[in-house]
Amino acid sequence: MKRKTVEQVEEPAHCPECGSANLAYDETRGELVCQECGLVIDEGIIDQGPEWRAFDLEQGQKRARTGAPMTYTIHDKGLSTTIGWKNKDSYGRTIPTKNRAQLYRLRKWQRRIRVSNATERNLAYALSELDRMASGMGLPRNVRETAAVIYRKAVNKNLIRGRSIEGVVAASLYAACRQNGVPRTLDEIANASHVTRKEIGRTYRFMTRELKLRLMPTRPQDYVSRFCSELKLSGAVQSRAMDILKDATDKELTSGRGPTGVAAAAIYVASILGNERRTQREVADVAGVTEVTIRNRYKELTDKLSIDVEL
Image 1 (cartoon, rainbow, N blue to C red):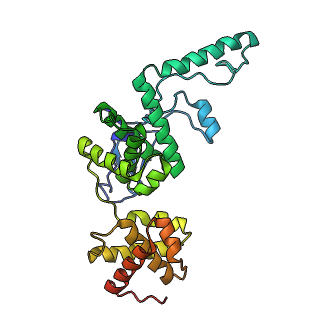
Image 2 (cartoon, helix red, strand yellow):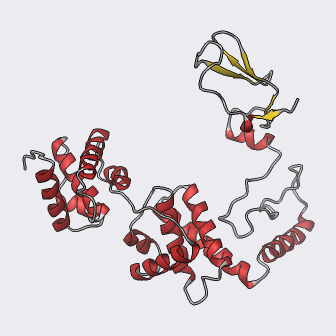
Image 3 (cartoon, rainbow, N blue to C red):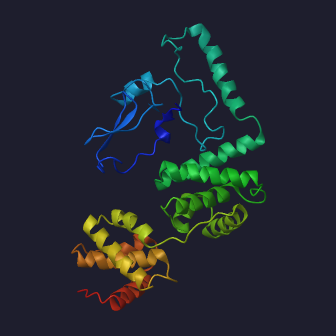
């Protein structure tokens, strides 16, 4: 019998015998069992996870026999060996003083060998710049990985020639944010980098055309949670702003408008309705738009959606 791994098992939604959804995976026997009638739905499942258990981070690091996972955010994908900075051997014993000079030289040559040519040196610089920008903007790990993959594709297609490394890195980060559903405005990317908004936009359009990146336009809903968090608004206000935007989308009030401006206006209306009023100036500063934009979008929303707001 051909055995399946845990990853290959597609758990059915219901038991084929009694129709119950109360199913459980028995790790010791490698079986998928119905808890109601006891039917063994699948068997011979191999668990490819570790055979040990850990109850805290330190215990997990001690028992693990593998290194860190592969990552695209390091120029060598994190696959090369690194010599630790501690003066201890593999058994944890302190290295004698007479051997420390040799260990220092080994560390130095290890750093040099990891970056062997100009291409790797440029890639290492670009990825460190990407990590710096992403850290400054508080972007999650998956966005950094996606941005690194996009940048590597641009390098492989020779799109870097004639353009600044910082510009291509910023454009890659902007594309990755949109791809992962956590969009940032060009102004935010420009503030985190040393590149102008105009250059980032130009490089981004060129890269999407050459790399055939299919990115959907950003929606006002994508900005609501972040703006509400920065304005310290409650979940009820955020939920109400999402409802306003849903109604506005159904009535086609969002098409042809800047998503950040529409999102800011919806949050402004929701904050008044939820008795957590924020001024137009406060909302405009967070959203990166002008007060005039918020007023215009606000009037459209309240008039077309028949929202009664007491100012």
